[in-house]
Length: 263
Image (spheres, rainbow, N blue to C red):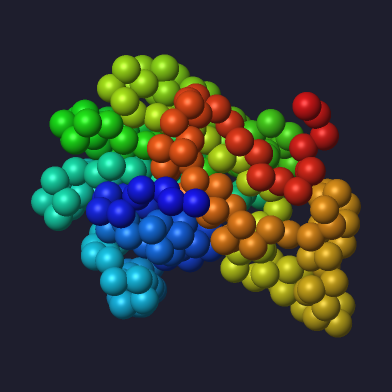
């Protein structure tokens, strides 16, 4: 399927690993130039150079933690300076949590609120004006199945991802008249380095069968009985970036292997 994305410019947060990196590669394969942001400057630079060399596209970087306002400002400034703005914004940066509501301090709530919600607010506020000048654009948010079906051990993650979905819906309604389409993707279980790291830690004292642990998680939660690869999730993002998805506005798309238990 021809997606007609060649020559467009995309900003991707959390773009050096996992789903964000897979999205970067998927868009690069379609000829999209990239501005990638992530906290680990060395890994970010290394992956940017690899993607640029592999796909022959331009890849710029901005290292920083998008939970901080100045990081979002730096991304917006770089997009303007390097590409004259952006056609695509992928708000992907995020991470899981582990706490109880009764014990989690305000500082933890503040961090996740800024990472999952305010980063998306700030980047939309900064990049939408250039999208308007360029004739339109696409904004996609990587939320989670936990926005609708929470996991009990991470209430802060659940709450902030749900808020991200609601922000996405409101933003979609506000900018659709500018030919800017906004949608959300809610992945289920995805085999990212974070999942592998956690599984290895949890099984270190019981034989180290981390693959077996992950399989048990998949067996319990996903009717498909496996984790998704980051590339499988990225495929949906790339499609939603294209005009092939031109009637998709303000929606939340689940890519969860049947994990969602409602309709």
